[in-house]
Image (cartoon, rainbow, N blue to C red; front, side):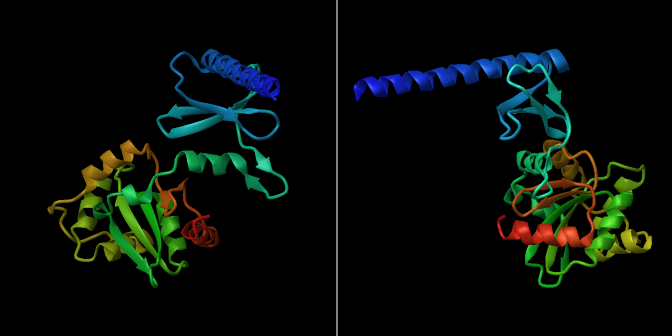
Length: 242
């Protein structure tokens, strides 16, 4: 029995050494491909096609490359599960770039409440963002959600002033929706104290570089707008802890 146990430990040690050798080869291959400044956050087996997942830290967050155990070939792009039609890469990226919803400083946002408002969503937006307007239109078709709008003026020269005017309005949600849905600019003066500068710092902290960026209750991050049916499904799934 003792000999079998020692033999098993030797085999396990061999696997560990092999994994370590693979990781060293992969790191070297990534440096050869992307340069010595490439920030490899982690390496793990992808779970399909015998590939390894290489997580690279960028200004936009974590990105994924796939490679073999000697880093001789790299795959850049999305991997789909044919049976479920799931984009495995996108799902994985959302988990890697997740933001804890409870860590968000919600006092720096204003609320748009639809129905009971039980489901929650954080929404980083710019008042001059055309895709944000499409998202706000879609949002009008969704019920039972509280949306926390973090204004980050990064698109147009007048975005900062519009953001301040909206924050200083008596009804911030109405001022926002008037502008985004009906092109009616806010009438309030942007002379009150606002969290706009803090939101810009927050966006840099979380590497949010585009609008709209959505943060769901389970921490998943989605860049870009989505239609009402997809938004409703994600709200249901994330609220249920899926």
